[in-house]
Length: 491
Image 1 (cartoon, rainbow, N blue to C red):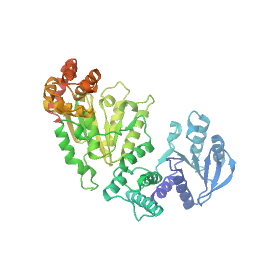
Image 2 (cartoon, rainbow, N blue to C red):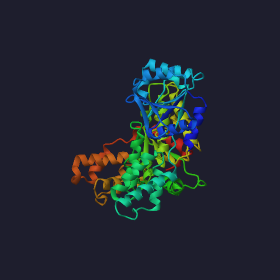
Image 3 (cartoon, rainbow, N blue to C red):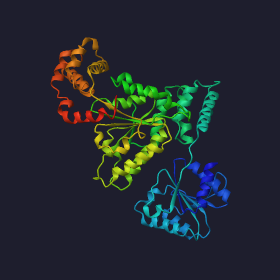
Image 4 (spheres, one colour):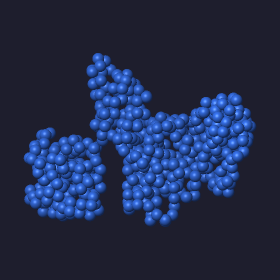
């Protein structure tokens, strides 16, 4: 077992403090029992509820009474012991905040490691060591199930359901099984089993309809609320007018992204540049919808934290979640707001950029990076060069044909018949309008006239009362177009 081998090597390297962050406490305990048995070293477990107990080489704990329940008591006890042992401390993390006595005791044990080589294993769902003891620690991660193990779990649960319900097998197909297996990557074996069980027991089958629910449940388990959001409503390009070059580009690369052939190079990502309201966000959603992938939206602003280093940690955790959710689309909306060039934030933006660039260069999982920006002049050149993203597309204001298609889409979206409107006249009147401004003209007309009273004239009146962004921000838009003319591909 690779985990046992790696943990054994870590203990042999004389690391005083080993940190294991996981929700699979039982798996970690079983692993430590195996390592302790192989090394013939005593193993003890502490929790605030049970105190310090001796762990036998079997699967059961051998209780010795509720001794040393307080963290300071058990650390004093360990410090006083002359015989080296492995001590598993469960959920010590709440006692490391503003607890100088507890932190100092841990440091004392670490400093005496040469004389008495105790191994302290700190096991919690999440743990950040104070800086004065973090240098004496090493982090150990439990391995996640392989594709073969995930497939075996799916088959075990399917067989169990079939036996319970008097069936030979459950209904599914190879393509759905492969996609389910890919969507379950990044989860522990127990979480995989739980999600598979829910998918099967709902209707006795594994179908295409189960996949979105599995992805939503997986996102909830990974828990990055506030910083990363799961976009439940994606789109497809039937809801997006224009952008024909982008559509063709994505269609040509869809099979390559889903391919599991190591000889096929997967597309890595795109940057969508353009005017506000031009449809960049809708296009990002349509990438996920077209490729049948979960869409994760990273809120750049929510990453920022006043404490030094925490912003970068938030970004690293968000990117790790995207890797765990693979295959997926990661959408960074208005990326310039978080990675703008400048020195006004004590270098936080530069450190965030370094973290993001490292991930973009080294990631192995199937995560398609989609960034949108309104002002590329604020973005660092390292981010937008070829190799970081596959292509930069410019989303300009819609032309007459596209404006007509936008009117058609938004009228149908509101249960209005486009054939009852003069779309050619509306398209001509809305020259210079973005897709968002066209939609708002329809919304405003519907508010003023009601659903049954809205006519072409009502929408024309709202168009006449609107000063589009192309007029209000004419100079910046002209500069943006001039910059994009020779540096980007029209979307």
